[in-house]
Image (cartoon, rainbow, N blue to C red; front, top):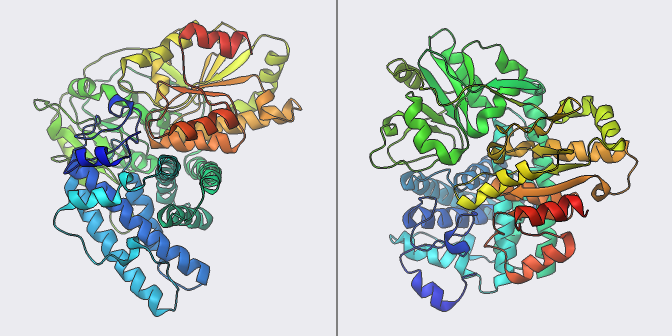
Length: 562
């Protein structure tokens, strides 16, 4: 873990980032992010988070003093800006610089208002700084990750911040559907405040890590409620992965509100809609099934988009993160649009109005000039096994377990990625004994959801609950099975965990599982670089967190010997 004076000298006019699984050498990106993020954008993101900490300090103090400030604007700025700094969400330094200026001005305004109302503010650089010098990069070195000298404290603080980034992503999706939770907003601000003030001990920071997980579960429950009350409970669905004959739009990311608006606006236009990557689970929602021009899913996980966007032929809409910078000669560059917290230089951005509505007419008009998608595969894949559906057959599942037909469930949720070592997860799925069932969510599913793994007594051996946030469904299923089977500990269930991670939404899912008491999670393809040796030891000793080994070793450990 880089965190000393020699390394800081090497960082001059560059960057430091180790928030994702692909970080260089599993240590940290210092010249340019493996994701494609340049050092200017990275350093602006450090400044942005610095401003958010200042806003959090002020609003936390004001809430404690029970005075009235514009908490709505402050909370929204924190959530949206944290989301914008998630891996592969926003590469547009102009967009991030605008957020830096906006949050700095908001911080100054809130500070002045709080002081005028008699709020006693802590002494913190994050709220007393009067302006930014021209050299953003120099300043970022003073406010970013490397300012914390104690590597264990740094590790815990970054673990909390990355968890808050994932939490904020899910909170923004819920908010766009009109679902808010003041307790969640208050916690995010307080956690950022505690991290910024640096007054917590290692033990207190460790407790805050788990509390972040607890609120991660709360926000995933909120989003589940927002999605299901708005679009219905996901249904078991066979999703078409072939193509039609009409021009089309490909929608990627996680935001179902954008999906709804796009389907409404394309109806009757002669333009079809396909999902991509993490938007696949939109196919499972009843409300979307009424649209005849909603054809199915095109392609695979996010990291294969450079090839798949070329063959899709039509425009692509990014609603959240998972952007891969296109090659210089990519033909699809002029067909990509972004919205919400996403951005990339040269991609057109779709704004929303004051009511949150968006006009996709430009995308639709472009689609009409394009050729239909080129077929890259045929057939169907099955999904829609969220908690409502699975619990409806809970009696069959319990009976299958008690009779020995199903030996184990293996949770293989999480993220996919580009590293060749991730073929491990496909190999692991194929090597699992025939009496095991995979529970999955997130884009990790693309490593095995098209394999012919069969079923057990009519129950498919891959049960896809949905997006990464739908890991909540898996937690609900586990807790219900614990109740039905009369167990006193969630870890006594015949469930093992072999999870792939990539970015910060996976971090909050992991923290959520830990907060529920789940132990012995295997995490790969590598353990996070932001875990110091001592913090990693805490997770190993307290929760049994482990990395992955070979397929044969892990089958033996997780299935045969457990």
